[in-house]
Every structure is written in C-alpha cells, then in structure tokens.
Image (tube, rainbow, N blue to C red; front, side, top):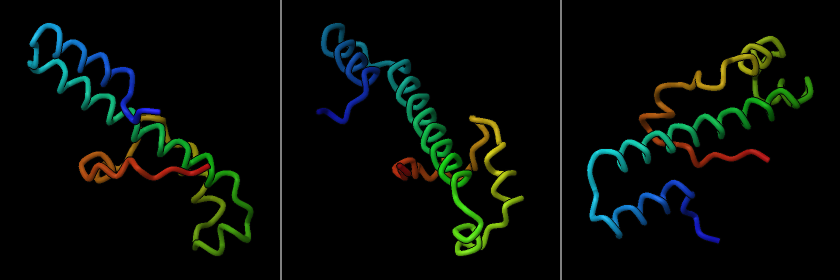
Amino acid sequence: MSSKTMVELALQNLSQHTGYTGWLPARLRGAMHRLKICVDINREREALGRLGDDELRDIGVTRGDALTECRRAFFDVPHDRIVGGTASTSVD
C-alpha cells in the first residue's frame, strides 16, 4: 500500500495533467500534515486516558494531569509538534 494520502495523489494527478504547481497543492499538503499531527496527538491522548494509576505513576503523570491533557481540544496541539513535524508518533 502506498504511503501517499488521497489528497497527495489528487495533487500529483492535478500537477501531471494540468501542469499546475501553484500555491494550492502546497497549502493542501500543509493542511493535511497539520491534520495528521492532530489525529496522532488525539490517539496519544486517548492512550494516556486508558492508562491505569500505576502506569501513570511510572511515567510521572498524575491522574489529574492525564485528565487535563485528555480534555484538550482536537486542534489544541503544542506548537513544537507542528513546527518540528513530529507527526510520526503512533500509539495503538
């Protein structure tokens, strides 16, 4: 399976068939990248919420801190995660 998203494939198709390489494809790629980061962080927050008290203690997080993090909005992501581009973290 290709690692390209449907949007990336559509943008590649647009560029190949029309020669269009303007600002729109770059903007869409940027937006898709930010969305992927939000999804990854949301998964991390869900995983954090499933941890037991002993597991939270092992990583130095209180139940209150974990709940606070889990309640953050979907698009509320740390700036360094967007700028640094560390969207590759995945929690099952």
